[in-house]
Image 1 (tube, rainbow, N blue to C red):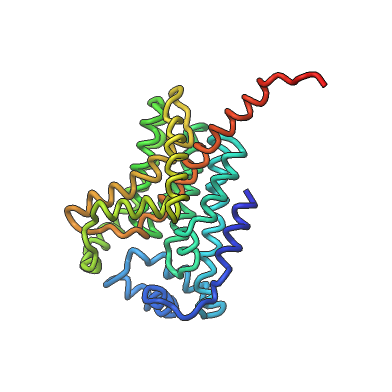
Image 2: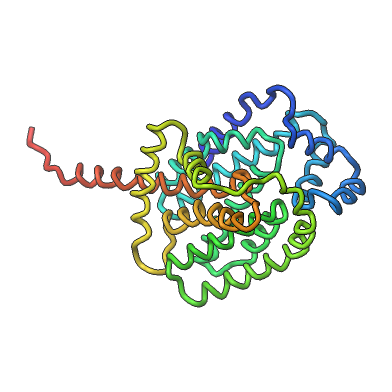
Length: 323
């Protein structure tokens, strides 16, 4: 899916050299410019959840330390995500849906915003979408090793990516897969959680860093829905109607993944789970679940494809009058 990637790359690079860094970007820049032993020492006290990203950016900024280079990995990751969303659509519903889904992701203002931010969220979104593509492959082929590996790395980029396991489990339930698939996926999921345990223990000890986070409200959920479906009333309501049409893919034979069976849990489960957990201890910030955005274009594109296929069938059935 080259076209969505190129569109996302162009939009991400447009204006990437804007003014100075904002607060979190400045933290990335300052930490990544330290030596590896200094970064390691810092992570024992704060920001362990961003440790892998800081080490990656340490290598990147060693090439040339400025704000444009700081943001380039996010631009590249966003372009990769657009391509992967397109490929997901191809695997689940065909080339037309794949192209539309990839382009919808590329023009999303939310994706564009984090494509130009020197933080880990665009990279997490790319890795999570790649893991979802490997999940689809695993259901069809029984190959789970690559899925577990990529998802484990994703969770080490940001621990809340572990909520992707809940989304994938919901997809399996909606698809009504057999016991063999559940066993394969469960083994991979268990290994991901085991590899993440050290991060969970350390980050729990650093939870005071999130003291500024406030509990989510219904307005928070509505705001995220609008970010996922597009700005402006016209775009929002059009995409909402198309997404609802796309939910028709929830029906169908067991064992088969569709855009609805993958996209709906991906878009809904991680944000909903984090919001529910935040009723006990505030944890929810929209950028922590940016990777869930990948599910929305799949639903909208699948919904748009239904009237397109109906119109094509009607054209074929209309008798041609003799000339």
